[in-house]
Length: 140
Image (cartoon, rainbow, N blue to C red; front, side, top):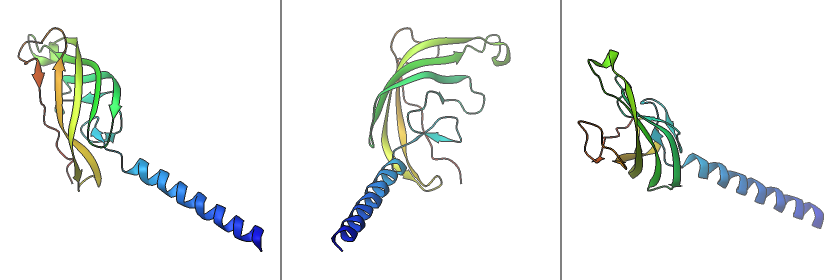
């Protein structure tokens, strides 16, 4: 009887621990990585969804929490000279901070809604050193 009680207690503890672990993973804050799909700690984020002429690549996250995330990587930006289809991509080192986590009903997930993107060296033409591109919830 005692062994049976112990076995039941261990099974109950294991199922509670397993449920807590899977719940924790499901509640991590995400960010859109390609304008349609969300990810935790993505290696790439497309900033301009219509044409992908501005993409963050090689992202390495030093912190990823429920409220904020910080990382570094490169911005690959098309100079669109003489026009975008014939333009060339240039890489610029950047730091990224994500914040303002809100629940997006359309995705059913908590998502970062603000990005602070800082060019850490050369600033590309037409940009400021620090930019704040909008991050919208995915469409329904």
